Image 1 (cartoon, rainbow, N blue to C red):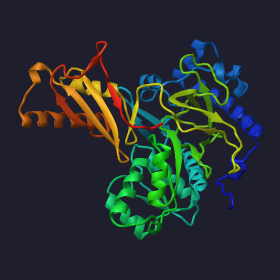
Image 2 (image 1 turned 120 degrees about the horizontal axis):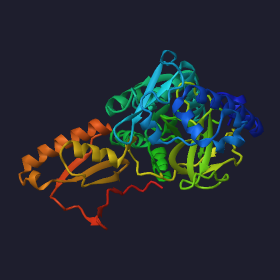
Image 3 (image 1 turned 90 degrees about the vertical axis):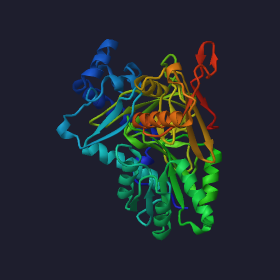
Image 4 (image 1 turned 60 degrees about the vertical axis):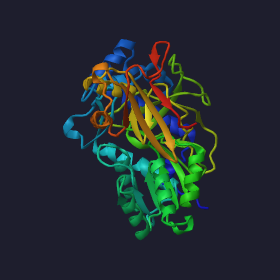
Length: 435
């Protein structure tokens, strides 16, 4: 099978040249950020480091980290490195306390992001002869716009379906012979189950490949999707904070995701000490955006736990690989592709007049996440009428949807009925087997 690349010269560049390029870009980026982002300049000054102290990637460890808390504190414009008139796009995701993470893009930023997504599509076998069905959400969510732009760069006929409306997804997929599907893995599984219910066999489905990300998924789930849809299922990784999907992507080996190292510099650190760990160590993934203009983050702590390796890959790409994330160092849950924090639930409960006595229960039925929230009623709120409880549950569920972007199934329970351990309730029960 012929090896195909979107930008072969870059994707197969010798490692020493990659590192040299990263060093040159890092020096320029640190200067750009120091001169244009007062928030980060203050962090550097507090640590006693100046741009002239950074001569290459060997000095990266001297720079301070950025965290989700910094993004919250600097919201909305505090980390912007370009004038607003130079920006052409924002994308957004939810933050830990209801504040959203807002990322800004110049036209160059958008072009580079779309190149990264185009690399992922070509690595999955895509070309201008393919029909690419993008069933990630559009709007502020990065999934749809990223893969949509990448598909255009490759020259695919692009179906900008967005998520949901499964009957219409299937109609377009079959009528227009879509060959590549881009969506969350759980939605891919649901589409597969729906096709099976309608009597389709894998050989009847025109798809040949799928690019799935935005939520955790297991190898068992990958195999099930591949068997049901008759495709190869490829992983893709990204964060709104750095750009969106396309930070890294799987090739035909399906043994980890190649990081686009010409744009993103990856480190693995000890999550407790911040010490940089050697290649092959398990730790927290940290990214530096090497050439993003409008919203360049230096040493951003993703909270994802994984491993990096430069083991030679049969696909010919020389970019370092990251393993599928093995968990997180914080309490964030990814449910149906959406970031959910317990603190967001607490914010809603307090605003609606409840005490923050609750329990989040996440499970996976078939290949779809279930999301339940048990909430203790205050004694004065307690009612034993079914209609009264149902009305309160619906109102609370709607309030949580406004905060989270997805609807949990809210269950009001009697006061003090949630089991406490050592005086504290167990806030999260995640029954999914994701690792």
